[in-house]
Structure formats: structure tokens, C-alpha cells
Image (cartoon, rainbow, N blue to C red; front, top):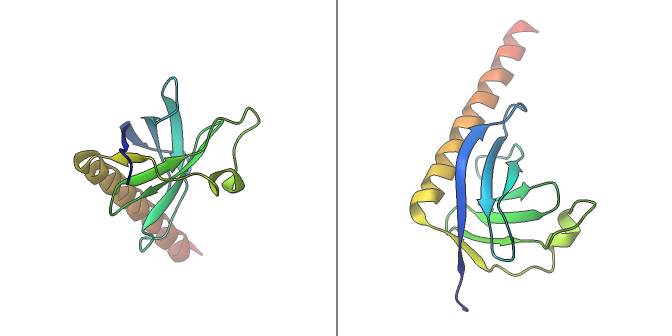
Amino acid sequence: MSKLFIALLANFRQSACIGSINFEAFFYGMTSQQSFIVHPHEQQNTSIIIQSATRIGEINLSTGLCRISREYEDGADIMNLAAVDFNNQVDRETLSQLNKALADSLALANLGQSSQQQIG
């Protein structure tokens, strides 16, 4: 495998949308960092899809391997990700922080769902 760029992820925080998180990231091919969102996902998923205003990407939650689309002025979608190879790596410590933020977000989403079921 070719040499991988170490992706820089930081500032994990809960999004206004329950079950999702936001973070700042810098991936291979980018000229500056961007804000990304991880939409709600299932706990058993081995990878997540991330999206910014102009890019879309995927991060494997076990290995830290990731890929990111090129920039699309009108926004990127899943089809733009299909032809992109894995050329980034998230380091173990950051991957652990990401997994914790995702678990916390999922717990909040599940708590919200159970509260709604009790009310209804």
C-alpha cells in the first residue's frame, strides 16, 4: 500500500441534530481545514460517512483508514466518493476520541427516542 497521509481531526462536538457530531478536519488534497458532520449511524457500522459543504468522505472506525472526495462547489454526494481510494489515516488516539464522541452521540439519540416513546 502506498504511504498514507495522516488526517487531522479535532474539536469533536455534538451537533444540533440529535445523533450527529461535528468536527474540524484536514485531509490529503485540502488546502485548509473544513467543518464536517457525521450523520446518525448504527452502532454496528464499521465505517461512517462524513460530509462538509463541498466534500464527502468515509472513515473506517476500526482501522482509521479514510478517503475524501475532491472539492465540489455545489456540494459532494455519495456518488462522488465511489471512485476515491483510501489515502488518509486517522491516528489511534484521534480514532479513539472519534469513536467515543460517536458513542456519546448515539447514547443521546437513544435516550431521546426512549423519552419520546414514554411520552407517546
